[in-house]
Image: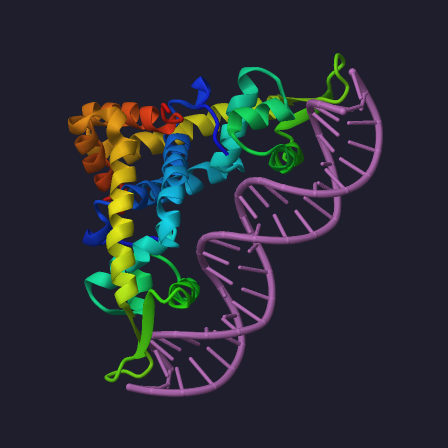
Length: 145
Length: 145
DNA sequence: TATTGTTATACTCTATAACTATA
DNA sequence: TATAGTTATAGAGTATAACAATA
């Protein structure tokens, strides 16, 4: 659901973060649809492509429960984008690796997502966009307690 | 669930927005708990306090469905923070107004939330925090198509 | 005993469809 | 006919608890 930001809420950090994310997802959905995945699945592919991980390890990186990871891998496997392989050293683990189709999908979908992000940040201009991303990176990390 | 931001995802706008919001909610929860409300309910109180609105009008401002609004008002009414009043001019509408307890809760909870936001943005410093909020305001608004 | 993957289950948040009362 | 509020229902997305296989 799209809607205007009421002036009353325009200074609310939580409200703004939530709606900025929704706006981005609204733009990312159609951009990724041609590749048959959504933003969350693209993130999973990204994590798995760098180094083959067990489901548990991938879940930790993504910050989700291991039961959530099962469904995520099920979906990607069903699309032929990843494969599960029993780990020989520890047969409790599934190593999840991208298929050739998965690698291809990741490459194309990443490009599409980058384009969406650039267009999303475009209203800020290059310099401000850079500062914005840096600030966001600072804030997304667990706060220094 | 808290976790570190993996380097791989540290440049991902969507990932960062989502996790920044989660970090903020994690901090806001305990801060608002003493007042018996959560961040979303505080937002509802904020919108209703400015001008008495019908449920539909409030739902529009908040960007939620009117069926979602029913549950939201139910909860706040159950806590004695708002009251429903049939609108005399159009008896289909419920005007929702803050009770004295609601006004009091809004005042105290707003202060607590402001403190959380200030602390959340503190790592950026005053100037960067201001720029960050301004950028976020720009991005949260529906993009100029 | 502890860990990994899995399943069943439940909880939160939200929306769609259908009902009612009003207009 | 159209709108406001309500209810029932369903769909995401996520987590907890319990189980089997493995360590």
